[in-house]
Length: 376
Image (tube, rainbow, N blue to C red; front, side, top):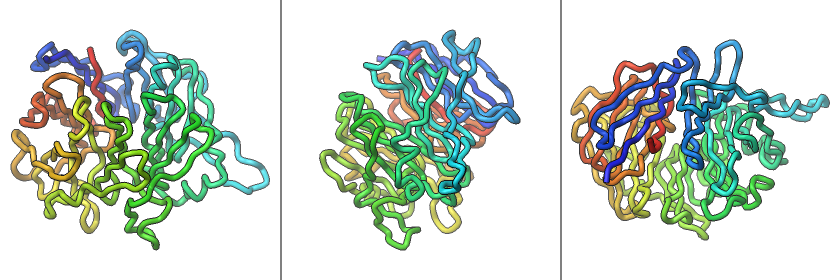
């Protein structure tokens, strides 16, 4: 059964909200919102279905968080955005300043008003008042191993990132984070302590290709119907971990060799634990990060990564050099499932048949940073 969807689109020059009819065939648009601002993430709170939080960088005013409770018509800025504590004056640790908030995560269903944020440089922050004020999570940000996990000279072309936060839906204290400098980390005490979770994940750019930490975890996702299953798209491949196991399995080796298993995002099916999608990109030589051969496609597994099938109907068959950033591929909750991706060329593509066919629903936007699907 289909249902209306809203797409929350963050770009290098502002945000837009697209809203569908009940069949997801026609779309209305609201925006631009904060034209000219960098919008890294725009998220709807699933606990109340109305609160929007936006991670934005406002030119000379710097990084901040905005909140709306009226569908994006009006916004209030955070009174205390994420910020690192001042560095000690003895010079034992480098000074840190938040360049931008990258990821926003609503708290556990049992904790209305709680939000989490991941930043660049890597930092974890928590709000207990709906995003108005944010506190540094000392368990990670001040961990004795922080500078080993998050070296000052590490990261991506857009800066080092704490790029994802995932909360176990069964237990508010059980959390995972993904970073571009240290890989995946796990906490069982709501962020008070952390441990690396990277066994079996390659880091072929390191002296030891399988270190305890140092991997570049592009994206992690818990299978909604099986939270002990974690999917990962890594700088060095596609992985799956089934807890209580500790060692990741590189399921991307089943991808076609000419395509490879490099990309930024992996999207689990909300109702089928063995099904997930990736959008592979060219990771050879100079890492062009575009669709392999200029022929964009998603790949789907329906057997937990043992096999992958190509889905490209509707995409350009040649000269389609798409780049899709790690926050810009998502799914809705409808049946059949809808998939959405935003490319850096300003196009939003959708499939309303679980990847079987694709069409554009938006064009000519600024460079797209994030696309989030939410019920309308």
